[in-house]
Structure formats: C-alpha cells, structure tokens
Image 1 (cartoon, helix red, strand yellow):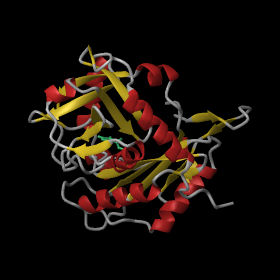
Image 2: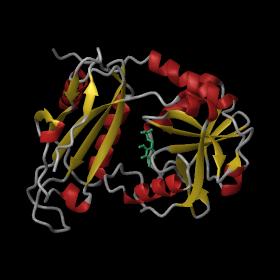
Image 3: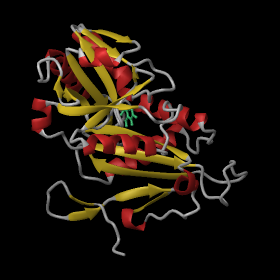
Image 4: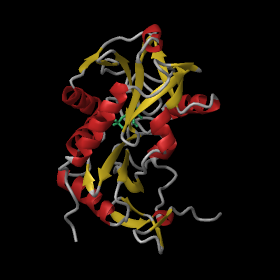
Length: 305
Ligand SMILES: Cc1ncc(COP(=O)(O)O)c(C=O)c1O
C-alpha cells in the first residue's frame, strides 16, 4: 500500500516537505511513524489528546491546554510521561520544523502497548505522538454567512469532560450533521443543551452569552474560559445555565467555539433561521475580541535553534 504522507509547501511555496512528527522521543517523517497494533490506543481507544493552536509561532493559551492535558491524564490514570518543560520543548521543536505561520499541535497519549486485556497493564509505557498541521483561516463565506447545525440526542458516554481519543460518539454525531448538509450538531441530553461534536455551543440572548454548565456532560473547551474573558472585554454578560431546546431555537444568535474555528456563528438550526439568519452583533464583537486576544498573545514562542 502506498505510504500516506502529509505534504505541505514551504514558506516560499517552492518545495514540498513531508511533515515531521514526534513519536516516543523521536522526530520522524509522518510516513515512518509506526505504532504496534497492540497499542491500547488502537485496541481500546485508551488514551487522551489535546489540540493547541499557535499563531505566528506562539502557542495560544498553552497553560490552559497543559492543565487540561494533565487533568485528562489523571482522570484515566495515565502517569504524565513528561515535565512541563519537556512538553513545551517538544511542541516548540514541532513548530520550528514547519513553515506555516499559524499551526495547531495535536498531542496524543495512550496507555501504551500490552497484551490485550481490558484492565490496566502493570508495566506499559505511555505512547506519545504529536504532530503539527497548518491552522488555516475558515473560508470567508463561512465567516460572513455563518454555518448550519442540526439538533441531536446526545448519545455519548458520561465522561465527556475527558478529552478522550475514544471519539466514536462524536464521530457519529458529526456524521449525522454532515448527512444533513450541516457543519455541526447541537446535542441535547435529558432536554438540556450539551455541546457540538467538536465544539462548545453558545446561546445569545440580548447581551447575554449562555453556555452549558461545565460538568461531566461536556468537554470544558479552552475557549470556555476565554469566552468569559472576551465577554467581559465586550461588555457582555457571561453565564452558564441549563438551556432547553426551546431556548436554543429562540436565541438571538447561536455561536460555536473551538481551537480551530475560534468563534463562529450558527445561523440555521434544523433548517430554521436563528435570529436574523445572519451572524449578529454579538458574534462580530466576540470575533473581533478573539482576534485582538491573538494579536495580544504573549504565549511561549519557539526558543530552540
Ligand atoms: C466535544 C468537544 N467539545 C468542545 C470542544 C472545544 O474545545 P477547545 O475550545 O479546547 O477547542 C472540542 C474541541 O475539539 C470538542 O471536541
């Protein structure tokens, strides 16, 4: 079978380069990164991940991402294999090896390789994989028109607070959206809004921005904390609350947030326009504030030669 290589143009656009990834201490071309089939990530989905954006070479909200990575590891009882400095230096090294101005780093840690048995192995070493991809701006048309979403029953498990690599529930949810020609879904559990398949969801009512309660039913996106900061900067009220289906449909605006989509307007839900059917004033304010936060970002930048 032909090797799968992630090819990208360099900064001058003249040369193709194969993406370099990190696997268990080594930097290797993506096509040469191999994991044994008995890795518990492959066999059980037994691991966690992180997605960290970097703008102009600087990580954005790295302390918050690192804290969530440690929380996810602790929740599934994998010992953190690296120090904070080691995590940062491996990421810096990946950023340096790729020409894109804006990148996102994918970190993936599994419980490691062991004989197949559900219980934790006694002596497995965690597998650590990391790669960088170009963080591309969303198409202008999506920014201007917003995107469609569909409502779905949340059929995932009850540990959605863990950024688990076992993503089948999220995969099925996203596919249901794609099958309905929508970009995302808005899920409901027991009649209350939870989140999207890979984003947090926000309901705007006048100048109030409402999110789902931060508990085991949703992933606490790094943009959840950021949303609080941005709302404050924009003079908007931020609140978490139980939100019903009716309240979602009655929203003046609906928004989603994630590392790669930043903040984006949802303008249609199950085929019905939300509010004016166009990205509204709160979206525009928050998007501007988000861009300002990126411009003001003083997160770590690459220091290695
Ligand atoms: C299920 C889920 N909720 C929320 C988010 C948003 O999290 P973040 O803001 O950290 O990207 C994601 C991101 O991938 C996600 O997968």
